[in-house]
Image (cartoon, rainbow, N blue to C red; front, top):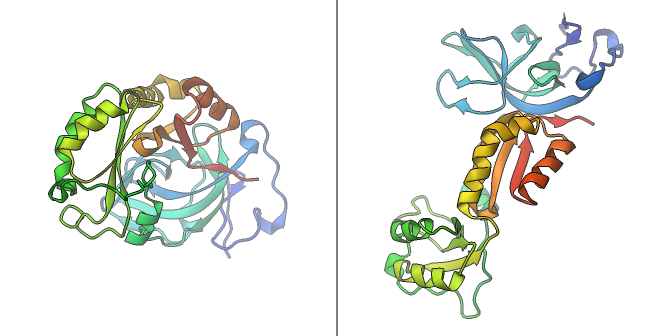
Length: 289
């Protein structure tokens, strides 16, 4: 088995059990580099840049494109499973290494097992459930001809125009077909506001003939947009976070935040600044105990 020492930190072959050639313990790093992190991600090198760890977006092209963290000690001849096309080399790996806030240094790398997208049953299982309990007489369907996703436009337009609009999502009660617009199955339209629910119910019901759940949530959609913009801007840097991406999860009434790493202090600072549950933060690299 080939081993090669790179910048005093080895990048091991797949299946290698030791961290250092000969089994000797490595010198323990100090300061911020003492913490090891693990993650699974694409490593990509192109004509434009050397090996980078793609923790954010990866363009679905051939060859793929991405921007990420530079890797200080990557060598393609020490790993397997890479692909090469158009001057780009890439592969997906399980990695252990250190992160100094700008660069990643690999300690261990192995080819990640292939994955496939979730099937319809799995997507249904993970979909949000109706926010309202089922009425005693069952869900009302006043006009079955206006209950498919094709009929959502009028109710969506009215709901999102309200200043206190908080979110809108569908909750499926049974397996989804291949074409939901033509074969809608059984779903509930959930619409959330921060204000008068009785008034909003009266606004929406004439425009929607299917199952309807109108609920109250804590934060308006405008508030969530404000939080998202702050995190994408100066707030992320102020909190010491390297932001990879953000999105609004309307069913959770929260902003989803993806970062490189997330320590306890920034996590607590997010909660203190925006409130409990306002930001759902996840890290691409997690500490290795």
